[in-house]
Image 1 (tube, rainbow, N blue to C red):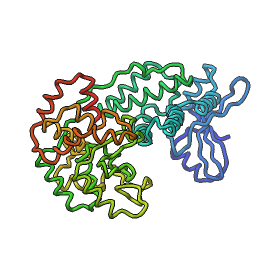
Image 2: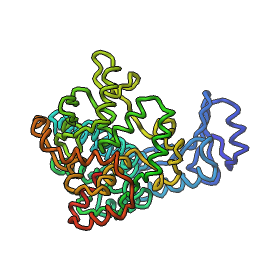
Image 3: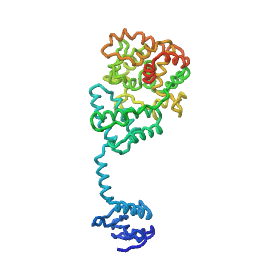
Length: 425
């Protein structure tokens, strides 16, 4: 076997021959260079270890320099000197990875249980959709491929610190809530011995208070005039009912009682996991009657979209969405997320309008679904919700005033009530 001092130029010349051969380095005698007839070019360490010749792959000629190969060879020689066979170490690491239990594995088990709860009516499909999105975009990258059974308190503290540094307080808290839930479930099922996130505290976050002013609402409605009627109707129904985006977009005809003028939102859609009955003011009923008359025979959804897998309009509010288009046209879109008008701000604006009109907060809570009413209670709800209906009527009739009026009313609530009202908005 030819031996010489390895240099890039000399090794490149050998590579161009296209033959199978071995060469030795004169500086580090255990370092070898292998060429193959198929173009393979590899650095290898060859050393006698425990009475046998051991060949250890260091890397390819195209991925490392000669100096890097020499350093890698010396590092492997030191391991051999310490009684550690790098080949056995690599094999053990590969087996450990194959048998590891990562956060991704843990989430799959959690997800399976989630799906069972959805079928049992205990959880909502939308909640699982949100959980999967949160997992992929934010939570999973924090854990990488680490085996969750090897996590320590220090690991958990570092993950929480990374979360706090890289995400907003709102996203961090959602992630932390999910992580704690996943690990709580895993511990309950005996998949892990400890939940190192159990005592982690949520981060302080500034509650969002963005609401439409009277002038902004006029601009928003004017911007809707250039949109297809279906999108205009969606925004108007959201403003007139104060309900969440997902509930409005997935509104079904079998949820509407035109005789009583109510909308029964099933527990599977409601965030509270309980059925909610929403009174519909005359203007909202006019929109629904018009849409009903124009609907195709057998259509299930009030706002259908045949191209959507769900069968109804799905609004992600991203680039190209109707909401982005409308808010830009109305001058209500901003690169500053705190100033940008979101679809959810319509719900908050509805609650604020009611409060400014003098409607009691208890009535607003009921209108927004913070108190549960079963779907089967429609007849009772028709009478019981008369005050809520009157409050919603004010939305279209009362002028806008300062946000501080709502804040004054909030001062009379307990911290738990305030969190329920504003946090749930």
